[in-house]
Length: 221
Image (cartoon, rainbow, N blue to C red; front, side, top):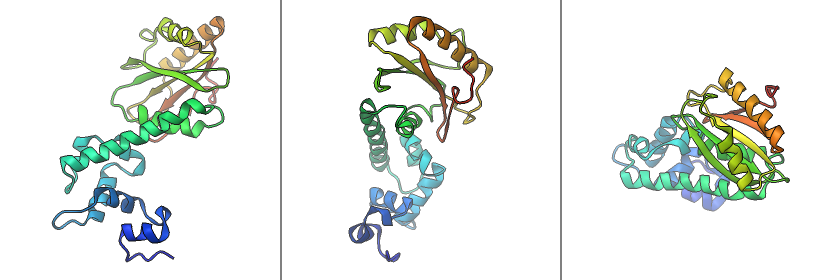
C-alpha cells in the first residue's frame, strides 16, 4: 500500500502514477509552493479554481495566475501542457472511427470548443469508414438558422471528398438543452445533406463537462 506520508515524486517512483491523487499530479507539475502555501495547497487551490479536473484544461494563463503561488512562467507551462493534451487527442482522431470511439471524439470536442465563451459551430468531415478527414470552425456567434450557410458546409465537404458530415456547437451557458434554432438548423442540414448524397451523421451540442446527440434525441425529423 502507498505510504501517504511520502512526497508525490517518491510515491511515483515506488508505486507508479496510479498511486497519486489529482492534486498530487499537479503538485509535481508545479514543483514548489510559496511562503505559507505548500505546493500541494497551491495545486488544491488550482483545482478549486477550475471547479475540478474537467475544467482544468480550460483555464487561461490569467486564471492560473489568480492562484497564489503560480507565476506567469508556471501558468505558461501549465497552459502548454493543457494545449499538448488537446493536440494529442486531435492527432489520434484521424485513425479512429467516431462511431467506434465516441468518447475520444467527445474528449477532444470538450477541449476544443466546450469552454468557449461564444458559440462555435464546427463541422467534421468523415470518410466512408467514419474517420475524420478534416474539420473546420465555420461560424462563431449565437446559432441562428439565418447565419448557418449550408453552401459553405457542403462546399468544403465536396472539396475534401467527404462521404458524411457531423456538426457540433457549444453552449457557453453549460446547458445542453437544444434550442428551437438548434433543431431547425439540424433538420435543414439533414434535408440538404440527403439531397446532395453527403448525409448528416449527427449534430452534437457540447459544454465543458458534457454533450448530447440530437440524433439520439430523435430530433432529426
